[in-house]
Length: 403
Image (cartoon, rainbow, N blue to C red; front, side, top):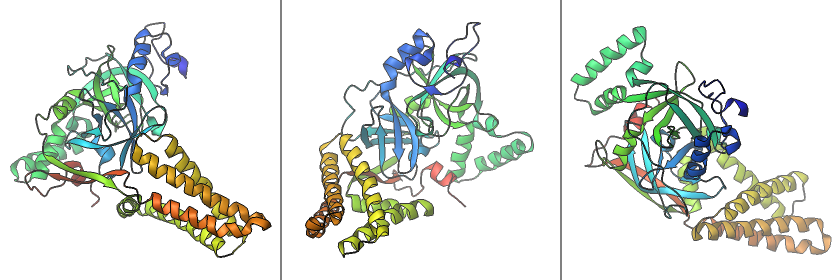
């Protein structure tokens, strides 16, 4: 696939194929290589509970992504290309109609982070463009293509009878004293861009660059009639960061939570499937370890206990290795020590002369694991409300709420 990326020898535009964002895939294109060298380190994988997207560092140092990536989510983090994880949720700004959010790094911008520059002038048909995104949550990938067309949202989603019905609805919305309907009309009136370029799930919020290396647009969704990137003009990002137009409408409540409180609050807002998985896995592990502590040597209890600890040790150890602040070092360090004690408690079950140490080791391990969950190291968004005591949720929350 790599040979399809970059300018063709016959001058044809690049192909919209996603490949790893490395200079070898620029096929000798100096501008592409320069873009990767200067910009790749400022593009992050965004994790919001179970959702993933892409974010990039805007001119004011905040991370820009789509609002729908963080909509209804609590714990939001950014992961760099080395696997280091940074908490997000400070100085949050939201544009709910244009599907944009800007979130500050809780512990300050990562060292060496370079804000990306933006180009607010609209692109011209045929202009070259490069997309850098964490498609499907993968490592950073590159796709090149061209700018195709500019639409309004209504033009993009409405055709034939559906378009006539939509216009009738919009005329009705404009005559009603209903804030949600006014937002719906504004949503349908907004400008969007169409690029012949790659991207897919996980690319939401990713920057699209022009040939000078400036961000010209932000991916929102894939097109409905094709697979092209449907994106937002970066002028809307500029308005968001400068708090002009419709900004300043929301107050975001955020703060630190312990692992225990974060777990229960998060599970309460999850889908039934995720809630069952997130609850059943630790419950099965705890039950198995309890059976071992009570003297059971059953293969099922031991096997489930070892499997649970293997996953827990890997997760806690990886989190400790990638910790970027003292809170995470403390919580993940204590949790990893607990994993080690629990593992030792299971292991000595197979050594008759040391079997008496099993219960004390399991007890110490359980105490350390419980203690780690009491460290307030989870920075979460606990509420998003409009200013001036307006009870309405953000527009996209209401628009996409299941009926």
